[in-house]
Length: 326
Ligand SMILES: NC(=O)c1ccc[n+]([C@@H]2O[C@H](COP(=O)([O-])OP(=O)(O)OC[C@H]3O[C@@H](n4cnc5c(N)ncnc54)[C@H](OP(=O)(O)O)[C@@H]3O)[C@@H](O)[C@H]2O)c1
Image 1 (cartoon, rainbow, N blue to C red):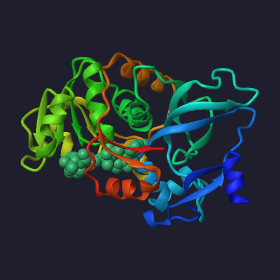
Image 2: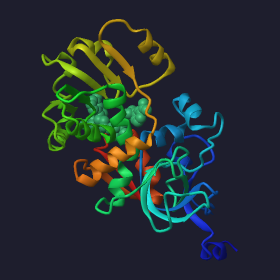
Image 3: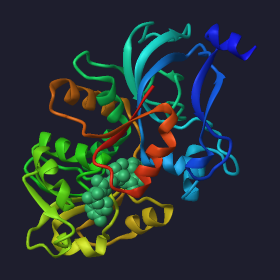
């Protein structure tokens, strides 16, 4: 019966879980292929990328991840994978922007990308430029929106400013360096010895090796510090911020948000929480298409190796992004 269903195309392979936990809770399964609702698109996924949100969503930690991603006791999202690129298989009757056969990429607020097929709304999806690969397109949505919002929405970066990016070699950092350069900043990237050349090649004007030098003791002053990997603190960075300088961190909690609101002085403390917007995706698509944004891909995995990919991500030393190819 199962072989029959699979042959008829009603089944698909997906990395599935029922409970929160370590990568061992993830299981490659044959499950029912989703059917799009009137406002949804059924996609054949070609590539998906791995984000920290997949690790938080998998483990259900920090607890806030359960509130944001859904499912206090058990995960609502059975299939992880927020960022995807692929081809439209069919569309619901109310979908206007996309048609069967379109090559697209985007992000799905309720995940589902670690599967052969995925149903998505059209609001956070774009046509993939023909000169951009599925892998590159899948690398960018979550990490790129986070990088852009750190710099622009929270950091209010202006052209000509001095910007330091701590964690310049990771998924968010490699994109943040390139976006900050595109927007006219002078960029210092902080990374370890083996990543210095890579971060320079992305356009960083200066690099600091965090294994040899504590950037918070630098003589240099910055208008904006973006701590992508949340390894420093506002109080450590305050002395190296210019007046009216901003410190953005990807570490977010309600407590930090209150602390930020009540902070005094001319230097700003800005814990950020990324929220995907279509305009941000359009900006990133244009950069990709023009060749100004070049994703760095560390490793590629097949669908059955998603647990290995998340294990590697959790070690905290990925250079750029990890890709799952279907
Ligand atoms: N607030 C939000 O909305 C939001 C959204 C997205 C992501 N995030 C958070 O942002 C963080 C970064 O995400 P990501 O995808 O860029 O992570 P990632 O790709 O896993 O970051 C790995 C990189 O961090 C570098 N790194 C590790 N320790 C470092 C240190 N002490 N100083 C400088 N660099 C260091 C590593 O370089 P080495 O190998 O050289 O150590 C590696 O290249 C995560 O903690 C994630 O949870 C938050």
